[in-house]
Image 1 (cartoon, helix red, strand yellow):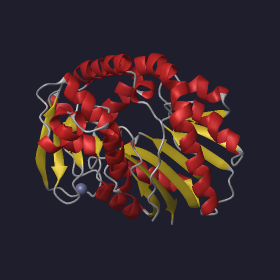
Image 2: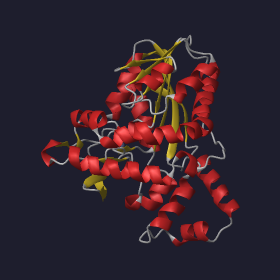
Image 3: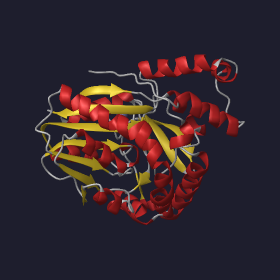
Image 4: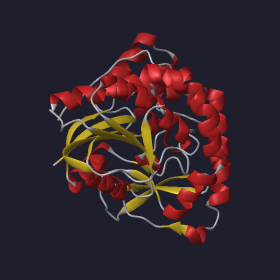
Length: 333
Ligand SMILES: [Zn+2]
């Protein structure tokens, strides 16, 4: 299995402008209380990665309990809002409307430069290396950035593009870029991308199974998600300011996500954590929250060591799959 380290001059401020992100987060937390305030409507779940029922409490966030799986180490919310309530939330909440109208419009171009082009090139390279299927049909699930279709079109691999259940408010932007907007993954897909979807999906298992069904044999899945094994989450844990319900129901471990994909019938051909922001995110969280007390070693690394040491450390995290930004490519067996 491949394991890739990438370097880029990605700047946190470009793709995650602090003011906009804080506004989105505050709206999300407020809306989560409006939509998910009845304990009777919350659903207990077993580990969304490996299915193990054994778990221990991890931490509480804004009234929701995060648990850690005793088998694979994934961290997840249980009890959690039902699938039906989550659908309502994504259709009606003001946080989602804000995200589509403001946040994504503002950060779209920076994302195109730093992330979407990387995603498209990654897909093209692996599609080519594995001699992927005939290259006819591509879909992106839960499209957050319609510009991805521009980048995928430029590759000249696929004839037909689809956006499956894009973020509400982005439908026409997807259509304007040649993507058909559909509610469920169409059949006979050659490649499918799901960027930052698993973390807020009610059931990652059902999600991956649907994707598996939609792909042709040999079809390829490309996904990114946030992993609990990452440095920033491990250091900040319950004080991670940017983890909240309903955007982060599942923080799967490297082990857990591998088991999930293999169980459903994928061969994982790449699993990397090419994140570049862990160290920066911990530093920012510490600057805003004086109650965060990381281990003295990390305090020293972040406060007293030269910038080069921090960059080298981030590279170490990438190399050893210890960044929280995880990307995975898999082939349908
Ligand atoms: Zn598990």
